Length: 261
Ligand code: AMP
Image (tube, rainbow, N blue to C red; front, top):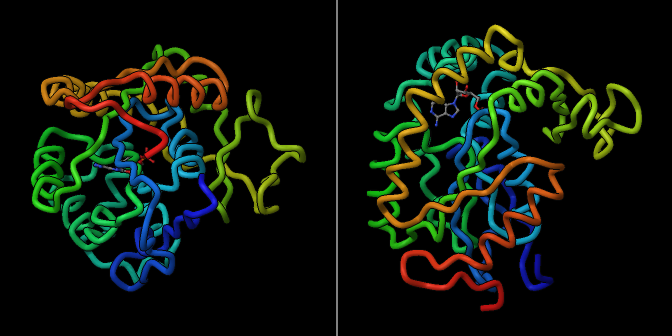
């Protein structure tokens, strides 16, 4: 990330209209707008964090919004959010109308001059069509859609060892990115836990939802000329290097993606 950019503040995204973005950038050096696609567990979240650090755009994850809502006492959750969380617990996709109302509440984040990194949204063709309509209306269409590709067997290995920090949400892995001290986050000292939806029986449902409802987005974005595919084998640093190289060499929607302007 360049010195002239500020570190993105995700609170407006996580909390919705009750929070303001305290670091809305006046003059970003170059606003990046990317959509990250791929099966659950492929490493989109880790790549989004690295890309946010490098490009200065804000990491917007719908899964993080649902997990933040899950952390508040049940009585403070709206009935529609409580219903959405039941889908999440089962590993199913939250219905489009509920996801889209959450997006509408946070529409300012899509219009941010600092750009965005969408992680986990859209997840259905219906969501993608509405997103495309919003982005076109605000003249903030994505530069590219990155499809992270990995065989299912490796995805299952990754998910089953995944550990998430209860405080800062940093992601570790029992074998491939183990924390220095077992059960403790390297970043903030928070407690690491296995996400409820990373349990084996739920993972099966999530992968099936991906196959049936999200995979069609690959063709959707290919037809729009926005899709680039990145092989997601390797460490987060390896995959990040491949991502940057792919973005550097891609000519999408008729323009060369530049890291300098
Ligand atoms: P993630 O962290 O992106 O894997 O999301 C965790 C869970 O939140 C998913 O398994 C879904 O239940 C729900 N979820 C997140 N984003 C969406 C979305 N765009 N559409 C439907 N459900 C979603």
